[in-house]
Length: 202
Ligand SMILES: Cc1cc2nc3c(=O)[nH]c(=O)nc-3n(C[C@H](O)[C@H](O)[C@H](O)COP(=O)(O)O)c2cc1C
Image (cartoon, rainbow, N blue to C red; front, side):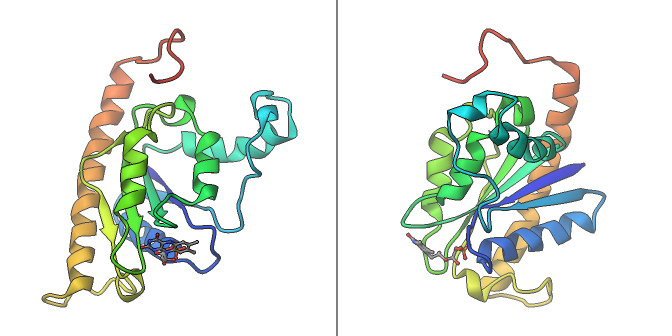
């Protein structure tokens, strides 16, 4: 089982990359493998019309990332809340990802806030962020609040407190994601859901 984790922060030393690595370590220590794609330093140029042309420089730039997305059985989207929104680099990255890479693959959404926010990026993605890539956002999402103070290690021995709460909840969410990943992989193997008449969602 292979997971791609998109760390949605453009910042070099972000809480999003810390949380992405936390989740990856848990998965890597199971029978799964992971690949973190970080939006730090904006890996892809701003999308423009030339991206439609498969011989363009932009298409060549995007190809290795699209191939990495295509290898995923499941996806984790870690989206920090920036001015109540998903950061531009993550939205730009998602413009390069379509059904060919991610259709009917489960995705765990993770909102991140340094204070008590974190719900808006989840809401923003849930409204329409699956339309053309056809990812299946699973019903359980995570919101990591007070991010600087939590998930700084994998010590699960504490009895209570904000840190142990979100760590335990993260383990629960990863288990749900893994179960969907197995089920939807079987479904995709058995059923060809692609119809060239409908390349995009409504
Ligand atoms: C441009 C910008 C806007 C932000 N806006 C919000 C916000 O609207 N709500 C919020 O809870 N935190 C906001 N934050 C703080 C983030 O929650 C904080 O940076 C957190 O660590 C997650 O982002 P990171 O992954 O980049 O570290 C903002 C941070 C930046 C850089």
